[in-house]
Image (cartoon, rainbow over all chains, first blue to last red; front, side, top):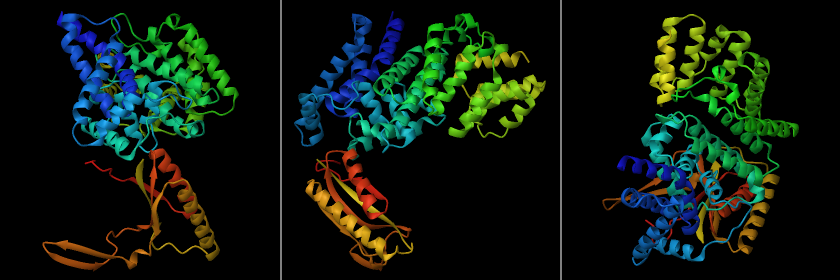
Amino acid sequence: MPGADAAAVERAYRESSGRAVATLARVFGDIDIAEDAVQEAFAVAAQRWPAAGVPPNPGGWIVTTARNKALDRLRRESSRPGREAQAALLHADAEVPEVGPVHDDRLRLIFTCCHPALAPEAQLALTLRLIAGLQTPEIARAFLVPEATVAQRLVRAKRKIRAAGIPYRAPRDAELPDRLPFVLAVVYLIFNEGYTASAGDDLLRPGLCAEAIRLARLLAELMPDEPEIRGLLALLLLTEARRPARTGPDGSLILLADQDRGRWDRAMIAEGQDLVRACLRLGRPGPYQIQAAVNAVHSDAPAAALTDWRQIMALYDQLMVVAPTPVVALNRCVAVAEVEGPARALELVDRLGLDDYHLFHATRADLLRRLGRRDDAIAAYDAAIARTANQAERSFLQRRRDGM
Amino acid sequence: MRQYLLAVHMIEGEPAPPEDQVQRMYKAVDAFNAEVQSAGAWIFAGGLHPPETATVVRSQNGQVVTTDGPFAETKEQLGGFWVIRAPDLDAALAWAAKGSEACGAPVEVRPFQETGEE
């Protein structure tokens, strides 16, 4: 069954590549060597596993194989002049002891990928590539930029890490406050990629969501005094709690208003709401805490009609003060439609320059539908469909469009 | 150990700061230099005369053309520099932050190519 085995290799890649790259980057002190070795190991797996079967611990197999591949290659190269291979071999022999407060290879790698000496878009691309194991085309869709741009960002960022000597190390306590916002933004993006996969037939890629939640939990443990970390964790939990209700039996997308709230994960909601209350009590609100609070309001309503939209709109007003982005403004419009009506919301949506963003067109389409502007709504659904590669989202939008 | 250039960027045409401020800046830079030296990070450093004192020499096909400088017609010009050794970029950035504080101007950090590097 080559088809099933190809899927098993793909699954193992998704689940283990980030951890494998992070571990090997620590061993060899070089991200490129680590990444190449892990790619090589997966190539071997793709050849061998169809006949031999998937090993009981695919992640461990990948790390061991990649380590041996890298050692072989470095020994060959170190016989030639050039210090890089020799340096990496010495590094591997020395096995660096743990320093600083962060004790997870992937977190160390995240802090390196999110180093402020790298451009923000390079930080995101690197983390998605190295930690989340996304392919370049998927990152391009998550960023709404061409593939070649992402590929170039990755190459340049890795070149800078090596040439400028960006250390592969977690920041010291004193540096953490400056370095943290970059990491939080990246963890949130990984979650979003898992929550609505940017391409393919599955709406959800639950592995990435679990990964993002795991990383957020670890960050919260390591830095318990940072309310934005708890805010992010709460936001992820409250969003993830709705996952069982978010798709129908056929994998189709179900909107918040139409979800069976009995299927929401109550334990996750309780944990998320406790976190929101605890961090808001500290009186240092930030974008993640406020977004978590919005989701806490949703999860409080026993039925969609009982949602406290006024409170949600007030929270979005607060969010617009601390994070005035067009996407936040678009989300605020959804609350405006409920409180002040779809006409007012459409007026505000039309002022936003988000033509590349499929949810901009989907939001417009829904408002136009509610206003009875059939032809405009159809055109907006078409625009939304043309801008998403996720099959479940596409069929949802298509059904809405056909229902006009 | 790696080597880094810490380049001080000056905005050309900005009014000179008052004399007491210039004196404070000289003192702060002296103190910073002493700190770099005692930490063993010092390789070389120097302040430059203003860009209008620069001359550009270009040798092409055996012809040497000499023109009045500076080379780049930009407002941002190199005002001075340090060359330091540091274990990694974080350490170099920490020195750059202190250097920028001392001289009151932005400092650009550039890694030197290492021997054997392409």
